[in-house]
Length: 102
Image 1 (cartoon, rainbow, N blue to C red):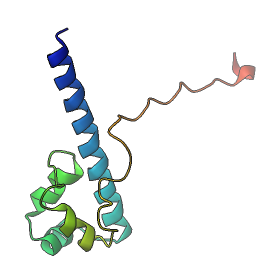
Image 2 (image 1 turned 120 degrees about the vertical axis):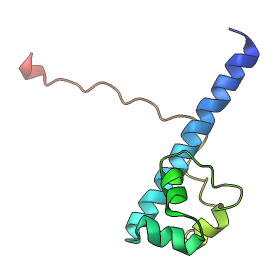
Image 3 (image 1 turned 180 degrees about the horizontal axis):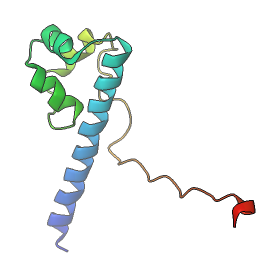
């Protein structure tokens, strides 16, 4: 495979997992605060569909919305993307069978 194509694919995969992680962070924090999507959207001044897109990893909030999200969700400034590296999660090992059930 062409190294340029391979690098682009790796970058796209890393970006995908970064957006999914950010979306999960936003959703978990929103649920901890018992906020609905509409309430969060009103707090940060965007349509509800934008909050949904962020939580589903289809919208990157890091440039414009990150500070507003962190304020609305009572998070530490700069923490919205500090939930880990750009590496995708490792697959879990296969479940071990009970030796007595062989």
